[in-house]
Image (cartoon, rainbow, N blue to C red; front, side, top):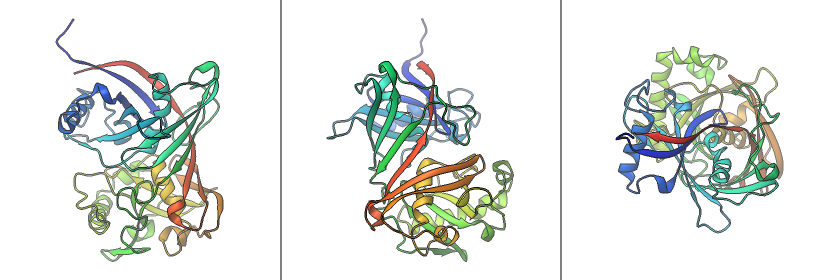
Length: 355
């Protein structure tokens, strides 16, 4: 026995991220109290997160809050939280498509969704963006299958595939897939395309930042001048996108793009924004893929695609390898775009966290 409070928790490696998953009912209802508790659980106050279960990097310090949905045709509601590192606070405005990957499996493990023999489809509502996602999960003998042969860039080994189909992914935070009304804007004399497709992202040509775009994340992280310039542009872009100040917030995200040099269509270095991402967020992948079909954007200039009805695969080169992102245009209206991607997840821990 002890004087610590216990809260049920699962930890997943989900896509190329890692995070803690909680049932909504196990956390305080009051938003401020909930956020303070999550910051405490993750150890956000310290950059090492030594007194919490955070991973001391933004991609390994994430939180998902899940509940059975009351929405028609939806099984689970998913709320994403990004705990800060070095500051006892969290950001509940962005979403995370990587952490989303394990939501269906978590719901099945917790008995929130009935499990079928063979394959189970789970419909998820992303509370942060309003998107709806159908996940197809392997469930032989009504058991969640984690082992498999699927490999994804940025994760060692292999696991069972989880297919995800996205709808309602445009304008989730700003109300428009082109939140500034322009295909590109000028910030400090530098061209930038601002998109809100699954995630608000500001795209800049790598050459305009005096880099190649093929640097490793560690090389980029050591370039303090680059981060200062990117943050200045991100702040200006955030205001023009209608998001207010970016200070203390992780959205909009920012990325530098360049021509692909291997087997891809376009190359990217994506920022969290305080560090360079080892691969690419799922949500940002839809921004890149869809933006390639929007004439006049920087993405379309580097990776010119003609907007026609149909299904397409856009191959995006990242520091960890090439990621395939699927987009479907049922009409010629960008607002109708649908996304598809296949990721993997693995349950790492099922138990209780103490505070």
